[in-house]
Image 1 (cartoon, rainbow, N blue to C red):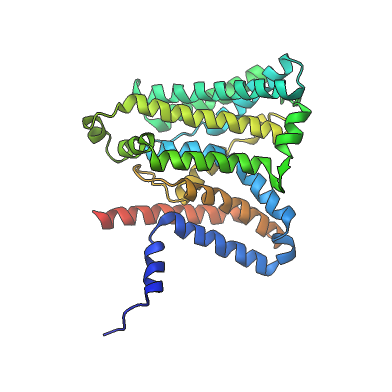
Image 2: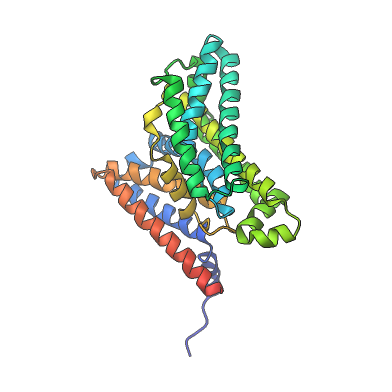
Length: 328
């Protein structure tokens, strides 16, 4: 008979059954490997700042996408809604002179309103029109992208200097403001999902919508709120993108929806609904940013990042399905 495992090993084995912690370990090992190879470059404050800023805007969108996927839905429109919201923010700020805190706040309100409207429309199409989420949000993606070009005509670059300096490139105690905003959003949504009635209803709908209705949950109204919240966060990401790049970058977000979904699923949220983690989502967003930085320093093509992220994504879905089969 083999000797019993040490309690520390049993504890570690139990923790590694948790998807978010498992993927966090992958991120930690990845960072250690890159640091061991190019410590002075990879572990420098400047590089860590770049990684945080690269992941921040995607994390804001991924938080909303995580809630949608927890309901067993999907939102392919987040990148296009970001672009449309950025265009509406730029137009609103230009209409009042395009300078100062007042113009920036007006731009924020315009971006949030535009994003929330698109998200609520997605929710209505999914619930009342009974269109599958994949089709509904795919249609919204095309419509939002097209309308952004119609309204703007070209990339708009009149961004208030205050917005760019304070948000796009500003920092607080050495931490980029963009990263602080993203962390605040992730923390707030994590608490919402884990410790509120809204979060419990979201997970219940993803697990079994029929049972959720029998428990008295207003499924349709709740789904509209979830999609509207995802749209609102995409709108916020649109303003953050304006602040960072100084332009609406209309053609620069074509793959954001795939990057967001990959980050959410890699982070341990189930594509089949009923289980999700904002902590895991944050780790899932950091993995591509860390890979890209490390590969550049190793002199390798950044296309390897897409290959490795694809492998991790498929492995995450496989482990999710295997876990469900084992549970059944």
